[in-house]
Length: 336
Ligand SMILES: *[C@@H]1O[C@H](CO)[C@@H](O)[C@H](O)[C@H]1NC(C)=O
Ligand SMILES: *[C@@H]1O[C@H](CO)[C@@H](O)[C@H](O)[C@H]1NC(C)=O
Image (tube, rainbow, N blue to C red; front, side, top):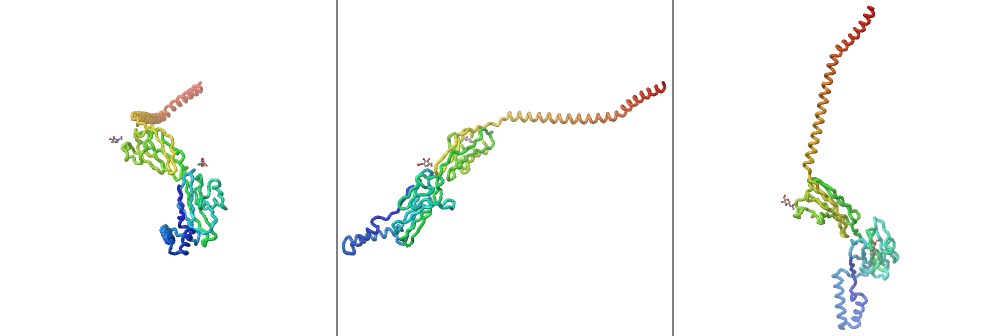
């Protein structure tokens, strides 16, 4: 980032103006005096137009950017411009405020704390960070105390946000999908700042966010959510098969996962028919078996009853037989 420092035009500086005007005091009708007065007017107009009338009333600070974005591992300069000051050696301090906690980064004419060995102070009171890191994201306050000025203190707050390049995202692509079913491919990256946007590629060709905008994908049923990284198919087609990869991108850069194959299988009608037929046969056998056993069970029960009905007759016959036999034996023994 380039920093612009506003400087007094040298001819308008107080020593030069007072010198040229002193000529007028000695000799008000000289040509040089007219030129001096013209210069004075020109300087006044210049300052008025730019809104930079220097005031010796006190210290006034200004910055070119109150919100600064930097890329990680790149240099950045936070500007603290001294608009007006009369004190020769003002006291300059910089503080870093992270999560509401202030700490010194420039104190007693030295870089301190987090930025030690990583930054330097540059005229007039700018701070240059050589190699920003994500931990430098914070608010920075430039404070200038000028004891000889009427208004002897001013401060300016600058917020620095360090962009972080995304790392390789985690991608999940199903290996095999059946035609006509729905599926979702996912992509996630957590390091990048600000949060990255996601794009998907099919056989090295970027999928337009809306398939309707490209003749090649007009029949595809996918939708992409660039914020979450999801690539959803409502109904996959044979043509959706191929290699997929995803790219996570923010202002600091991009990263992508390696391509993964997604295969699409036809619906196997014969297989489904055979499976259904097989299931039907198993079901029929089951039903037949249940019916058969139920019927057998009924007969068995019936037969049992019949037996029961027969039983007394049979048993009584046997009993009687036995009894008769015993009886006979008894009788016969009795007789004998
Ligand atoms: C900045 O810092 C990182 C790590 O702290 C380092 O890898 C990189 O080389 C540095 N870059 C420069 C330009 O010094
Ligand atoms: C899209 O579908 C229409 C109608 O079914 C067909 O005519 C056209 O060729 C298809 N386009 C592509 C690119 O497959």
